[in-house]
Image (cartoon, rainbow, N blue to C red; front, top):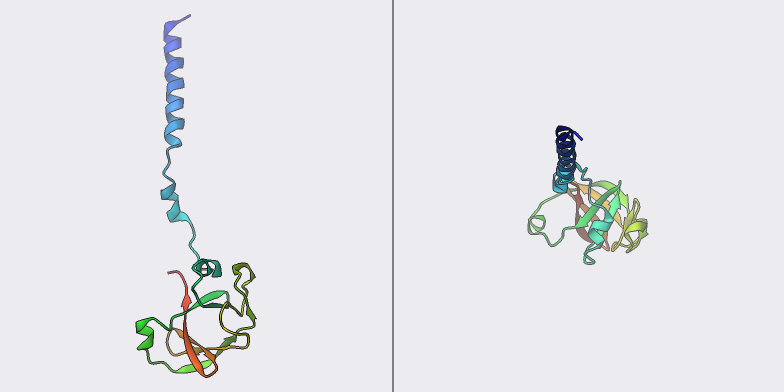
Length: 133
């Protein structure tokens, strides 16, 4: 057998093994940048177990009454934005008009700020739209 043929075959085999090995060493963290990040879902909040949210228009709104800058905010309540029509603690059961805390029939109002107001027994509770970006 020709010694140069053996050396070429061995070289090619080693080269293929190295290329396959290097290709398999891709960093999975690099691909995270290309993942699409959407708006938070009820599941993202309900994992905490200590949250007050509702969904209207496919967007999650979270209670922000204990946030300092919200306490200091002056706003004017505008028109009605929606109403709570369902109550559940299960993320998979959330749909438009669902809350985990607010009672059914609660009316939600827009304001002249980014805050939305839930009116419960003459109590005004501020909520903020939870969106990415």
